[in-house]
Length: 298
Image 1 (cartoon, one colour):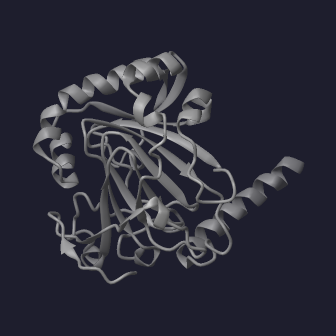
Image 2 (tube, helix red, strand yellow):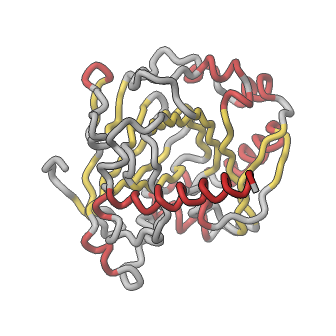
Image 3 (cartoon, rainbow, N blue to C red):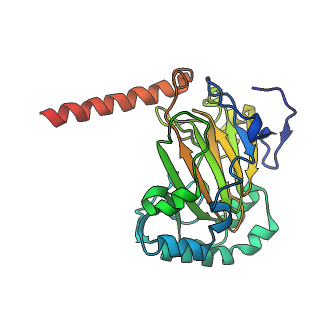
């Protein structure tokens, strides 16, 4: 990790800003490297100019989408999933816009993800929802509006659209492939930790999620987290964030609503092997695949 000055966030965590670079300066390291906010990477995207609610409804319309559901507020939604369901996209977007109006005052008052999380949790959600969908399945037009950065020689494995309201957070986790988040509407805050700190942030054994929440840290329950050193950034429209394999990140919507595109590429050799904390996850997945293969021939 580069030696840059550290500060203490309002939550008490030790954090340092993610380094920002122009697209002309950015290259993906063979060994994955560190996160970077890349500026000017998507300045020619049609998405930045066209993706407003009326346009999205006209292009996607009543296409049925699967939405994530959480009972209560949308905090750490992937760690607190309820039943979920399917709904026409235009109806989901109407819920997002109506809920965003209800949350406007919180968005205007706070910009710290911890303050936002506490205020949204106290706002009286019965249920909350989040959309992550394959962009190409929603619309080829939208896919054309948001071409992938040319960071790798291969095309992305997945291109996802994310859409949610203020205070929606993913839960601290890592991905096993390199990825890029591009902000289109609103803002998102990212707190990141390098793979070597998995023990300090209480990673689930054999999994990719963590018990520790850097937005509202509980140092009494998770005392090792006091020694964790995070990185942070807030992504704004037109900015891209490169997240290397294995880097843990908590993602939080910090505007009344937000929409972004997420690209995932195949993991180049030897990036996965260079991160021992993921070996158990890879082995567990390989065993599960082997079991499915044996069952299919019996």
